[in-house]
Length: 150
Image 1 (cartoon, rainbow, N blue to C red):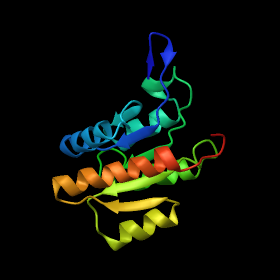
Image 2: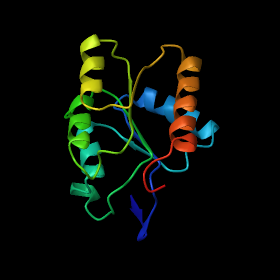
Image 3: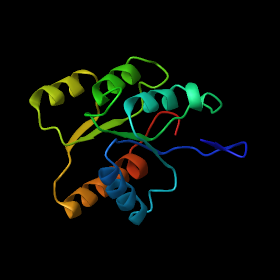
């Protein structure tokens, strides 16, 4: 978001409605030194507004996160619909999307891949394993993965 006229680029976009899961994710990223440019959004509607510079985000440049961590089960607009919209638009299609969800439903997995998700991870119930998974995801997508124009 713009702050005092300056735009801070977002490297990791976290879209998660559960505050506890978001806090675990943010802490793990911070411990691994990936938290400098993380934007946490609490539902799919806000994520779409952010990605397409609409509504409260209309005064910012269109963001190009290095990775989007997206939950499926959210209020207003669910993660499947967010994925569908960003993969259908040429401005956002190349953003890597990792479903980070508690859903083990085969239909969610299949639908996500049909719509172009880059990875699908089921959140471990164990706090330590969840933190470790988040660090691995952050390291790969932010530090190792090459994106067009980077």
